[in-house]
Length: 251
Image (cartoon, rainbow, N blue to C red; front, side):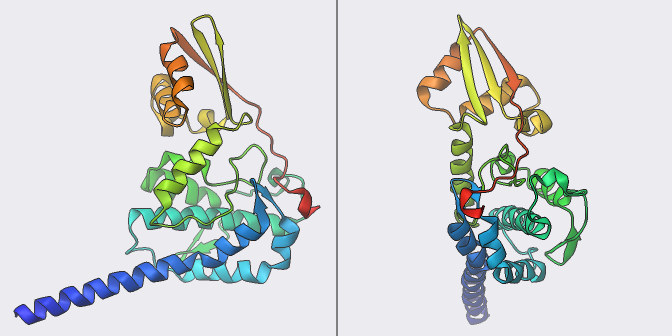
């Protein structure tokens, strides 16, 4: 019995190692494409179009992947990558297009196959990433192919690194004036923030004070102290730019 238990432990450990390797390799093609065609959040869609067979091969892998045994971190990476890859594919299918909003029902159509299911982008964002996995930082990682969105990163998200990568994406988001800045007037502060904090405010906290506390996590010490010491803080939402996040290299 003891030998059987030891053998089972060894086999389980071997299976875990092999599975981790498979999961790491799953997003390798997507990572290569992102490194090649994305720079500072700007996307070379013409370049992606030249390598569309590689992209399609990656999407086929997503469809055939069973995520039921994945850890929460692996699921986060899987669905963030899936959302972004499907969005790039959507743009390619309608290219050239000036804005994703020129496409009919871009987020609600159930046309994407992943983990053995057929889903919409809304399903991935709202049902899986927001409701099931409950991770507010996904709003700095999933991208709607628009300038107003967070930057599409030049790397694929990975389960072992996803928390560090989400933190990095969030810090980048709050360092960009197109997404966030604040002004002081006496002892009062006005925060100018992306409309993401209006559309999905509850993900960052039920009350304004909780949402401000969330923001403070990603600011430098000096800026965070200025906001903390203010007698009042109000939030204003920035205009969202829906123009395509296309790089000059893609023109």
